[in-house]
Length: 307
Image 1 (cartoon, rainbow, N blue to C red):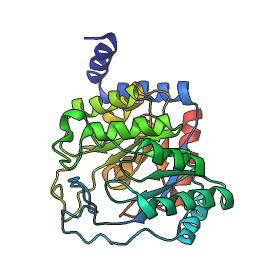
Image 2: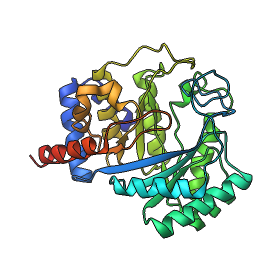
Image 3: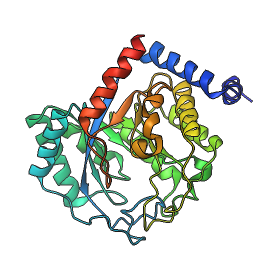
Image 4: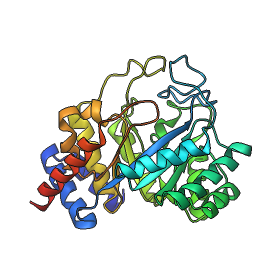
């Protein structure tokens, strides 16, 4: 067992209060009071060929998620403009499907360029499994970051997705990095995985040097195989966030989908467990809190951080 593995096992044995104390100290030591905000547009929805068991956009399941083709340029630019207005630092174009190509990719590249020129916000994208030449084109258009979640650990991945492999996800991350893009990659808690699985995913993210880690908590949605999944206890979510901060001390850890429902009144506790970012303005198929409430929370948390 390596020293780092031994250190992690020691952290896992700590009570939650001490684990959170150490995680917050690591956040403040490595990242100060930095807080990252991002927003997205669900630019192409539904009929996805992949069978991710948590996703209402999968064509394998019968759900009430809207289905529509890639939205037009003006809509994407308008969404980016709104993202900047509500205080987001990054705006991401997200599309359903295994991977975007052909004319749709051309249109996203056009949108990236237009947003950079007209809006002036940093542009990200989440377009599925792509290769190096596609990433080169996106970066040339002005894309700064690519989002591609691992979702869970290598060990648990096969119980969540069967239509593509964990290595395909890693290959996409590597190709994006080789093209000079930052990478945003994280996953979902509450899929049925163990704490050991969450740590395994954190260690993979550390190994691949990702630049931002979004953490989602499963929202069990009707029509998906995980519709009846039991919710994670708040204490378990907070432990996992704290462990991620200690494993990834210099990386933004961003609370994403599920933070409102899973954490509820304990949302601020997650920001005292080392998280220092949020997705604002809603998610792919679910609405989020009002941006004003999130900005107020950030301001209050910063007061506590400065103590």
